[in-house]
Image 1 (cartoon, helix red, strand yellow):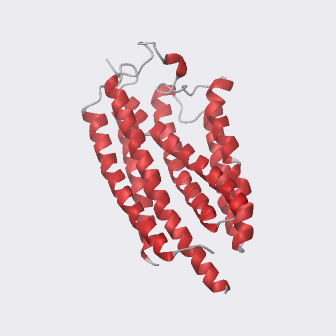
Image 2 (cartoon, one colour; image 1 turned 135 degrees about the vertical axis):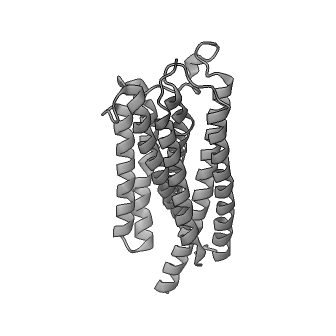
Image 3 (cartoon, chains in turn blue, cyan; image 1 turned 30 degrees about the horizontal axis):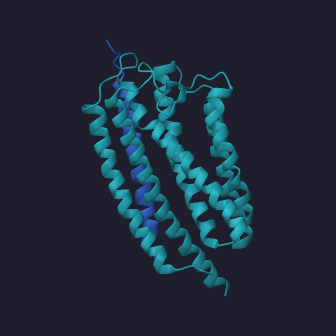
Length: 34
Length: 237
């Protein structure tokens, strides 16, 4: 029976999504003004 | 000076499109990893970090290598676009590095029992990121564009030494960090050592998604960097 440790993967997945979304927003804002 | 404002805008637009595709790809990767990939027998659900941590690390190293190559080419050709690309790639590498050093400990806790170990691979990755933090500190400290590009390129080239050395840390030293399980030459032909097809498919999807993130981010950041160089050039003349 595999250990019950899904919270680690959930945390990692949320952090990856937050970091890439944050950088996407930062680049979007920086790229708006020519 | 061969800087083109319209080309910079095109690069930003294409980068945005690729980034949006990558974001959708990340959502797809999560569904694939959670719903359609078997759970590993010993590590349990925590092993699913495998589908984001090594792909982010690969994309980070790719970004550092591109920084190193474009830095070397800058010193040779003295084209400011190469410096802008090296800077863009280094910045993207730092963001990908942030993902690597956060997801690594989150996986380390359930797999090793500790959040962080001063293991050669982990320590060297941290050194790599610190060198590139220095790269940006240096860029901020030198206002003159040509001088800045020249000094930064020298630091950027160190990536060409650091990246292969970091890859070899797991072979050269006694390391807790696992050696590659997909690109492992010794595993070829051995049915036991291979990753099950469903896990391999999800892992390769992760590699594709992070490659798209790298391309999307670097194209946007390159366009932004070229615009800044054009502004600096206009201010100086």
